[in-house]
Each structure stands twice: as structure tokens, then as C-alpha cells.
Length: 180
Image 1 (cartoon, rainbow, N blue to C red):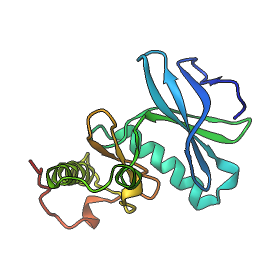
Image 2: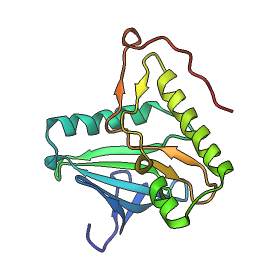
Image 3: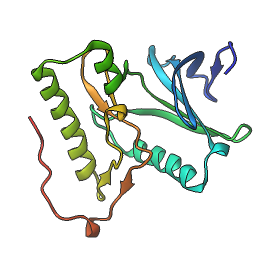
């Protein structure tokens, strides 16, 4: 990204050059949602840097994120592919950072906070496992893929790139429990 801002095709989102994080093929920037009047995260995935498995994983993540709606799962607001640059763009809620980075920054947490986070993560996973007609399995749950809301202290499960959808016939029929 250059120093200038960029916009999505609908001009709803404005991306800045402020990098929030990056990985092997994804860079996340701070952006602004003009329709909602709030900051969001703008992720750019360079599709040409992915092999076929990586590309199908990125597209699968978008499809799964479009289907889920839970307060403790990162919410996808918009997505599109820029054919000219072969880049997938994802607009999601903005968080303070990953759970592991948050704990490194703020240190050891009180047991009540840890219990709250555990309940929220379990509720998110129970939702994924019991959502719709086919369960979703995250397959890459770790502190780096759980994000903290800086204002509420709540957490949300994200990075569904390795997630898979199972048919009900492949799933052992178990009752999903909501954790209070």
C-alpha cells in the first residue's frame, strides 16, 4: 500500500497505509467504514502467492464467514477479488489484537477473565459445530486466532482459513452445549 488511502469498489470502506499485522500472504490494514462510522480491518490476500490449496482455503474462509453470525466469531462485512491485482480483500471487525499478543502486553489475567474468555470461545465453537445443516470445524484454534475487543474485553474466534464443513453423516451425533 502506498501512503495514500484506497477505497473499495462501492466507496464504503477507506483503507489507510497503517499496517496492523501481516502473515505469509495476508496483510491487515486499519480502515474506516463510512456507512457504519467505525474503524474496521481491511485484509489483503495476495492470491498469486498462494498454491491451489491456499487459494481454495482463502475462498472457503470467505464462504464460511458469510454464513456465520455470532458475537464471538469475527464478522465479515464485505469481500471482493480485484482481478487486476489478483488480490482478495476482506473487511472485518477491528480488534485490539490476538489473544497471545494481548496477554503478552497486559500480563497475567484474573481467573474470572480467563473463564469469560473460555466461555466465549466454547460458545463460538459450539455455534460453528451446530450451525446450519452442516457443522463447521475450525481446525486451527490457537491464541493467535482469537482476537480481543479492546473496549469490552470480549474475544472472538477468527482466521477460518483451515476450517472445513462436515456433512452430518461424517459427524458423530453429539449434543452441542451452550456454556453460560
